[in-house]
Image 1: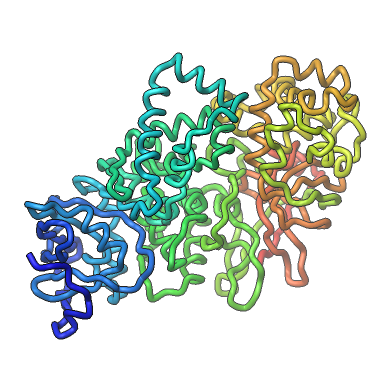
Image 2: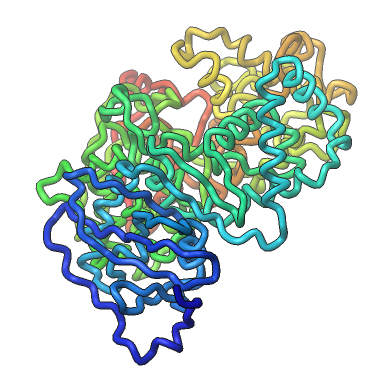
Length: 612
C-alpha cells in the first residue's frame, strides 16, 4: 500500500464522478479498504437497496472545517474529504480486512441538491438499520480522553453499589471542595465536545442501534455513558453545576427516535409525539444550514404530522428557510388539537424578510423549558377547540379567544442562577432575587398568609406557584396522574414555604404561619423548579393582580389572553395592524379553564385576534 498522498499530488488525476442513484430507496455504501496507519485511504462505492437490509456501519461525526484538504481514492479516482471525516476513516479502518461503512460526505453527492434532499429523507432508516453507529468525537489533542473514560467507569461502579451511591450523593451536597481529581475537568471537556451540539445527532444516535464513541484512541461504550449521565442528572445537581457537567446532551439522545405504542397519537401525553416539542428541544443544537433544523427531524416518528396534508412535506433544499418554517407552522397548527405551535414560539424582530410573529424560528439557537408541552397537564382553555384562519399569503393568523388582563409591573430578566443553592446553605438572603420580586413586583413587605390573591387564596401560594410554573417538575414526578384540583393547596404551599423559611426565616421576613406551612417541605425541589422555569423569563403582575412568568421580551401593557385550544395563557402586544405574538406564559389562577368559566358567566367575551 502506498504512503498517504496529499491532494496536490493527485491533481493530474480526474476526480471521482458519482453515478446517479438508480432507485428511490437506494443508498451508496463505502467499502473501505484495509491498511496500516499512515497509508492513504482507498475504497469503492456500490449501490444497495434499504429494502434488502444491507450490512454496513454508519459513521456519525462533525463536519468541522468544510475545506476538502484530504482525499480518498475511489475506484482509482480521488474524492476530496474534510479533515474530520478523513480522521474518522483512519480511526475506523481495519488493518487486514475491508469495512463496509456509510458516511454522508462520501455516500451522498453533496453538490446535487436534489439527491441530497432525497437521501436526507432516508437517513432515519439508514441509522435505524445500521449494524452499529460509529461516533467520531475528534482527536484528543489535550489528552483528556483516558481520564474521562476512567472517571465514567469509576462512577458506574459507584452508582451500581447502593452504599457507595448514597455516600457519594450525600458528600456532593455538602463537601464539593473535596472533589479535586483532575478527571472531573476531563469529563467536563467530554460533555462539551462539538459532536453533542449537532442537530443531526438525534436521528444518528437516538435509535436502537448499538453505538460506540471514539475520542482519539479511546473508545466509550454508550450504555456506560448513558447510565452514568442519567444518574448524575437525577441525583447530583450540585456536582453538575460545580463542574459544569452538561449531562443532558447525553440523556436527551437515548431512544429519541424510537416510537412506542403510546407515541402513535396526536392525543398522547408523551411530549415526544409532538414535532414542535422535538424541534424546540433541538433548537439550541448547531447546523450550518437553518433548514436542517427541520430536515434533521423528518426521520422522527412525530414528523408524521407533516405528511397528513395532501402535499407531502419533502427535504427540499431549493426552498427558502422562511417558506419551510411557515409551512411547518401551518401544518402543525392544523394537525394538532391544541395550539402547541404557539407554545414553542419565541419573540423575533419584525422586518420585511422575517417570519410572522406567530411562526417559530427554529434557527434562533436558544431553548426554554416549555410550559405548554403535552405532559404539562395545563388546560387554560379547558376543553375548547381551537378556531383560527390563516390569510394574506400565510402572514396573518386570525384566532379566537379571550382577553383577560394587561401586564402592569415586570421584573428584570431572570436567570437560573437567581435561585442558586447557596441561599439554602446560609447565603445572604438580602441578595436573593425572590425577595425583590415579592417586595417590588407584588409590593408586599413580608411573607405572610393574610394577604389574599385575586382568587381568594394566599398571595404567598400564588407567588410560589407562579415562580415554579405550578411546581411543574414536582408535579410531573409525583402527581402526574392526579388532577391539580385534587391535590390540596397546602401540599404545594409546603414546598414554597419551606424555601422561603430556609432563605428568609432568620431575617424576620417570614411569619409563623408560613414557617408552619413549610414544615417537612422539600425546599431543594422547589428551588430546582424555580431555577428551571424562571431562566430567561420575567416575573410579572397584572392590573387585576395576577402573578405569572412569561418571555423575557414582555413589557408593561402587553395583554394576557387565553386562546381557544391553548394549554396556557399567551402574551400579545397590540400594534396598529393587530397584534404581535410575544409568547406563552404561566399565570396562577388561569391554568385550569378559569377563563372559560368566566366566559360562561358572561364576564368575558369572545374576541378575534389578528396576529402578524
